[in-house]
Image 1: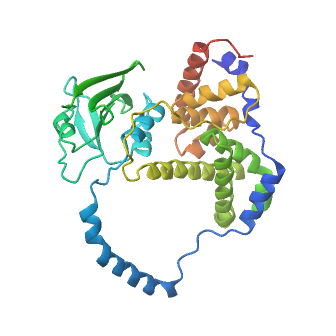
Image 2 (image 1 turned 90 degrees about the vertical axis):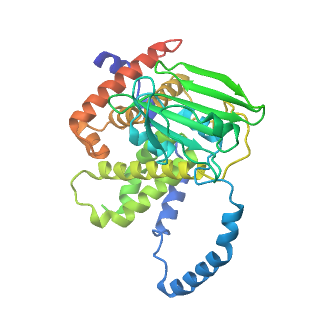
Image 3 (image 1 turned 180 degrees about the vertical axis):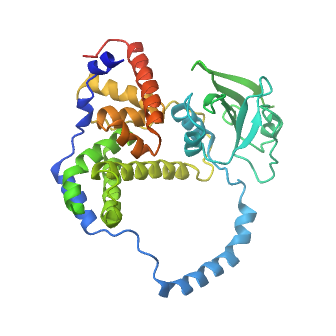
Length: 194
Length: 167
């Protein structure tokens, strides 16, 4: 192991070029910056009054027009996050940083492993279904949910693998995208919606 | 030392550390600014438990992870029109001219985040095991075991690559 480290030239990575000019610009910005000041108390009352009025006026219409619930990541974004950020062996904390904390805990129907289930792109009518690692295909067919992600944990609470099942509205097919424990990726269409 | 002396002494290394984490020169500069703004405002509370640089890198790491969290929150914006997923990724801002250095960097970035942390801190930033443990807020034993696994993984990744650029 030590020989291997001696062979690697880490020192080149210590030198990311940074111009003196840029360094000086940042220094000047810090000189003239302050941490975000606490909001002046003299404005507090009037701001609260305006906010209250805005809530009274606009909140009902907001609820009427809102089709998506809070978990409104696009399918694209989630798949990109999964493919490039969520890696086998990651800890629960790391996955929470990337994927958020809006998940349901369930178990694998195959071996009982712990899983996190993320429901993505749900409408307000959607009722969460947690049923082992079975995908809510019915909900997808009805347009109530666009994607489900299952992250499987090993005994040390590290990512074992993950899978994503999503509706591709371009061809009206449901696809499954799986990262297997050996790092292999499998993607296939599993259902066509009539 | 006052904060400006600390800035002149350490900002290049802090910028380097943040750049290695975020892969973007402009973002690294902004986060370096945020780091030293915190240093400026909290220097009076520095208790001297670690040396200045270890303390500043701890701040830089927190600032960088806050950035990752904000980035994630930004991505949790209202549902975008659906497009079929593509393989597109945000291009890295490559600062390294040497191809083998770039390859080494890309290989490190392929590792798990906690492996990247220890490789960057231990071998690029050259912190001791004790300092790394202080920065990561974990035990020395944890740093040792994570480093061992990270190096093992790095070796495997490098050996899997076509063309040997080591040495």
